[in-house]
Length: 409
Image 1: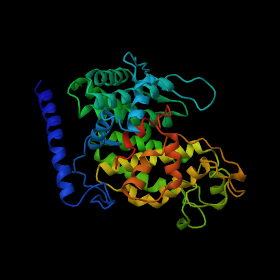
Image 2 (image 1 turned 90 degrees about the horizontal axis):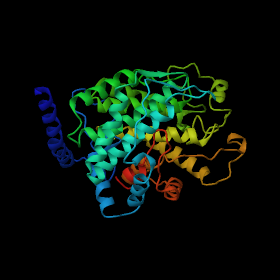
Image 3 (image 1 turned 90 degrees about the vertical axis):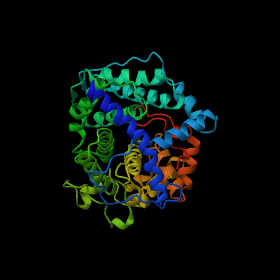
């Protein structure tokens, strides 16, 4: 009982002190509005407390979403209705946990793969609904879903285990973060069980990345690692994810400043022109914004745009400006893919003149920072994003980002 009281007091203290810290940072020159900020590209001190909520969506952003929806302002209200009316928001949503999630890479049926991803998205959906509406039933439902899985799951198997774990863990961490620091009904026993689930069944699978795979794997796994690290107040793991970002993003999105060839993935043996061309799906001519998987399809490049933006956004909330380190590269990648997604004719040098235009709902977070906070010109991305609004969910690890990030600088 004493431990429970101490934990509750800690939560209340966080909620009381966080606004004061934000105000102090603003007084010292910090802020989101014009891109001039006190956030640093250097490593954050290991004893510096994490900001909560601070996994992808901050406390201030949640407050802005709530205000927009209550005022029925667009595009947020339409995005809210889209989320509210989705299957993930059902009042009677029931979790379908598995002890072991098995996700093969081929046509063999998996066990628990879709169920795990959808349940994690449902938990996040109800966490957002709780923060917007104030209806405790949504917080209770989010906790119910998370607790159902934390009582059962022990791990992931089969060849797609790393990617599946990354997708699900990203959503679990966002859901948990949005509930833990805004709701007083998550019991200590449930919370500790959920923390153990992340530490034992998810973090070991993703924290070391997957350098031998296509880059979307590595970036999604790093996104999940960083998200769990913040929720778990695990500073060394957060720094590990930051370093992973710094090595993998330049090896995935090309800039001419890299030289004639793309950057090789750190820790891999892919370094010759022939090996890089094969790894980049036959592409031997490189241009600003091209990704390692562009000539595979835009869908996988889009996953990586989302994961990169998610990590940079979470780090931003924690006082680390990863955006500043890759802003030119990330802007070029968004503009490149948005241009051809909108229908521009692919030249012969690009994927033999044929590109697969299947981007997902993955642009709001990056656009909000690069265009909204930094005021960079992004006409192609802005046009594409406005045409797609409200950006909903991909059913994997991206959900409701028009609602949470459109114009939220």
